[in-house]
Image (tube, rainbow, N blue to C red; front, top):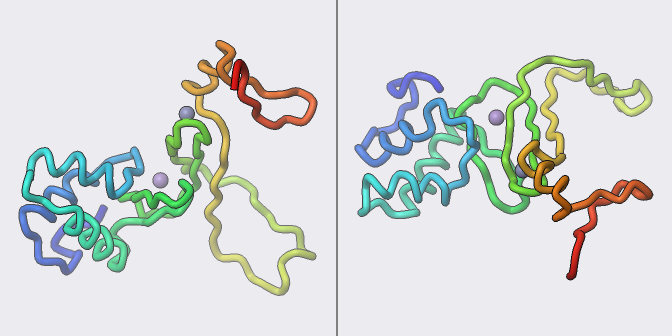
Length: 152
Ligand code: ZN
Ligand code: MN
């Protein structure tokens, strides 16, 4: 995150609390997560304040808004371009910072010259895979699709 002074936002104590919560936060919290955490310290804080602050920060490119968790928007204070790993079970989001080859086949480029990319990888995190190994969730080897084990 950049210096708060460079944001161009009037920093009320409530906004500052939101910024402090987001700073170095690698959880990719939703607006509801941020509201739950910050309203502990500021019981008078409204959800609208969180929402409006997030929108202002997003407009100023101070946070990234990620639309990778279904309808729930998640926020990332690291605006340096990076990739994400998303757990389809618990919705955890992890960062990938290494560069790797993501060349689009020439025939698919449609004349575009590519300048950047950002890829979302979906899968099951180690914690959820452990639960899966205990039999609560099994992956069929026949079609590779996840199936729920046990009584429906
Ligand atoms: Zn998970
Ligand atoms: Mn991220």
